[in-house]
Image (cartoon, rainbow, N blue to C red):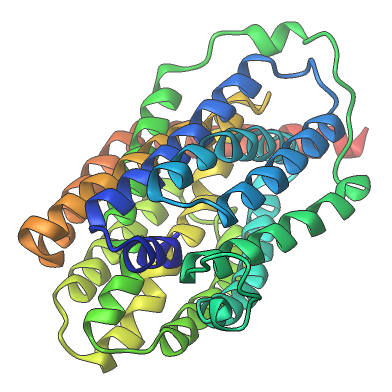
Length: 373
């Protein structure tokens, strides 16, 4: 999304605010797709959701390539985002039912880090693809990005056969049991945390451009973040089963605020090179612990599945607010807002994290009894 926002500004000669509005619309659609799938949980076979969702994403990625203006682009991202939300929620709800959710989410996030390595290398070069494409269309830098996305979403169709199955159908009584109130507060906290990160995170490419860095160089920064994103989630997933969740999340939030404020106010490329990758990857370290805690509060996986909706609502707000802040007050204002959002989000999550920590011995004992049987 950081590359998208920069390419939208350059390709359509618009502002951060307008580009942020396009991103907010897409992320809001992801949240809507997530909410629908959570409400219809268990009624559709996961493979059907994956296939229809991936096919929809392919279709509207193609439409985005030929978008003649920013309005057309923004409209084309709505159905693509809705389909992505449905797919993502199905994946996360399946993972939430696993035997060791912290490790499962750690491995999923690490896999995203592997993909991030590829994307961070390819996207800066895709920005120049318009220079070599046939002159049958007025190509822009943004078109090169969406051509890459089309190819990636086509590849996703090839992997549907190996995705987790499970059958749709009637839901069990436990799937309708009321969920603890603290879990919903934690989801609001997660939304605020990711909104805070997004206020600055989606503009990391713009920040690099302001430091006169070439897109390829910025891509290497994102590759470094992706490399950290491979090891960090797996490590955190392992540590998260042994350290109190509320302590881990509090430390992660403090580091996120500190690195965000440094990146938002730096005028030195060296500081950007060193701190931006850490800042960019921190949510992937927080994510497995957070979702593991939600899985202990709600073993049915409903809270974990719903997290995508809350997360994407926060992420949807971030580009528009962040774009307006940067246009009117500079990126240092984004850093201050980030600190406020993250601090409030961590505090809202603390009761649920404490409850999850209290349940951990009980969950572990139940697993040992089940394994012994």
